[in-house]
Image (cartoon, rainbow over all chains, first blue to last red; front, side, top):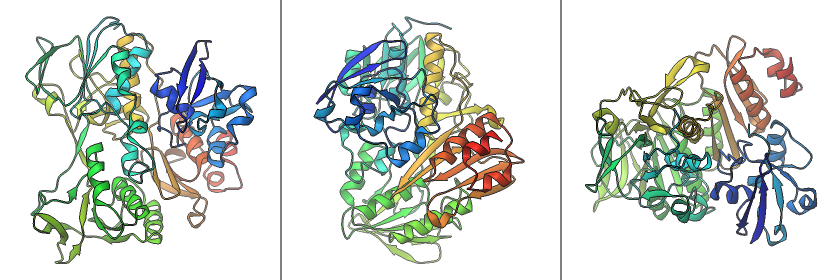
Amino acid sequence: MAKITYIEHDGTEHVHDGKTGLSVMEVAVKNNVPGIDADCGGACACATCHVYVDAAWLDKTGDRSAMEESMLDFAEGVEPNSRLACQIKITDGLDGIVVRLPESQH
Amino acid sequence: MTSADAHVVIVGAGHAGGTLAALLRQYGLAGEITLVGEESIPPYQRPPLSKAWLKGEADAESLALKPLEFYAGNRIDFRPSVRGVSIDRARKVLALSDGSELAYDILVLATGARPIRLPIPGADLGGILELRTAADAEALKAALGPGRTMAVVGGGYIGLEAAASARALGADAVVLEREPRILARVAGEVLSNFFRQVHEGHGVRFLTGASVTGFRGEGGKVTGVELADGRVIDCDLALVGVGAVPNQELAQEAGLAVNRGVVVDLEARTSDPAIFAIGDVTLRPMPIYGRDFRMESVPNALEQAKQVACAITGRPAPAGETPWQWSDQYDIKLQIAGYNFDSDQSLVRGDPASGHFAIFHLKGDQVQAVEAINSPPEFMMGRQLIGSRRPVDKQRLADTSVSMKEVAAA
C-alpha cells in the first residue's frame, strides 16, 4: 500500500491509497482523478497517462521501458521526469510519492 | 445547452456508459445520474477479456472501471441486471425490463453491439462460445486448458487474440476463415500475412477460404465444425467471432434515426435533442474522412463519452480526434491509427521479418491510416499526420534512416 498524491495542472491535489501491484494510473482512474485519461487501460499503447514524477521519487520508480520511452518521445511537454503512469507499479517503497499532471493528455 | 441539474439516464453500463457517468461528475454535473446495465457487475474494460484476463494476468478488480462503491459515493444510481425496453419520448420516460419506469431530462443510449450468431445447424450446442462479456470470458477460460482444441470461427482480432491466449494456456487453436486471408475486413494483406506467420510460429493452424456450414455434436456438446467442402474440423470448443451488430432496437422503436447504427452528430446527439448515443451502437461522422461510419473501439467510446459530458455540462467540445485502436498478441503490440478509406497506395516502412515495421496507407501524399507493429514512433507520428492532413514525402517515409520526426518535419 502506498499513499499517492496527484497534483493537477491547476494545483488541485488528490491523495489516494494505492494497493501494491496496481499502477499509479489505475489508482488515479479508479478514483476519478481528472487529467489522467488512460485510454488504453494500461497497455502502454496511447500515452494518455503522462505524469511528472517529483524529483525525490524518480529513482524509486525505476527506468522507462523501451516501449514507454518510445511512446513518451512523441507526447507533448515531455521532461526528464516524465513517465507513463500505467508503467509505474506501486510498491511499499513508493509510499508518499507525488506526481504532477500535464495540462492535457494528447 | 447547459443542464447542470438535469437528471441524466444512461442505458448501457459498458465502457462508454460507465466512463460517461464518471466524467459527468468529474465535470461538475450536480443533477442525478442513473446508470442502467444489463450485466450483473459494474462497468469494466472489455479489451483484456481476450488478452491479459484470459491468460490469468488480470483479475476482476483490475478489469473494473471503478470500484463498486465509487457509484454510490458519487451519487450515481447504478442499476445492474436490467435493460431498457422502450422510450416514451413525449413523456421523457424510459421503461425498464423489471417493469419500472425512469423519467429523464437527458437520455444517453450506450447499448453497445452484440456478436453475430451463425444461423447454421448445431449452433445451439454446448461449447460454442462467443466473447463479448465477462461472463462469456469466464465460460471460455473454463473451457480452455492443456490438451483442449479450440476452433475459432472467424479470423478477426478477437479470434486471433483468443487463439494467442489459448496457446499460452496450452490449448490448441485452429482458425477457420471464410475469406482468402485472415483480418480481410480490417487490415491490409501485408499485416494479414504477418499475423498468420506469427501465429503459425506459435502452433496455431489456419484454414482460409473455409466456409463453416454447421457444427457437429455429441450429447449436446460440440465435437466438430463442418465446412462447405465436406471436411469436419474436430474441436472441444468453438469460439465464434464473425463481427457484431449494433443494439439499436431501443432507438429504432422509439423512432430515432438509425442506419446500421444509431445516427448521431459530432456531439453524439441523436435526431431527438434530449437523447444522445455513444459507443459501438452509433453511426457517427468522422470529418477527416468526410463520411459517417460505425466504429467498434474503446477510444471511440471514450471520445463520445467526452463529447456528451462536454455538451451536457456546457464545456467546449473536445478537439476533433484521429481514431485509433490496438491489439496485443504474444509479444506483438499492434497500434492502428485512422481507417484505410480511399487510399491509393500502401507503403511499408521497415522490414516485417524484423518484427518492427509499419504500413502506411496513403491517398496521394496524405496519410489515411497506419498499422504499426512494435513501432510506437510510426504510430504516434502517423496519427498526427492523419489528423493534420499534412502531405508527406513518400521516399523519406519509406526510408527508416530518416526518423519519423524528420519525416513529419519535412
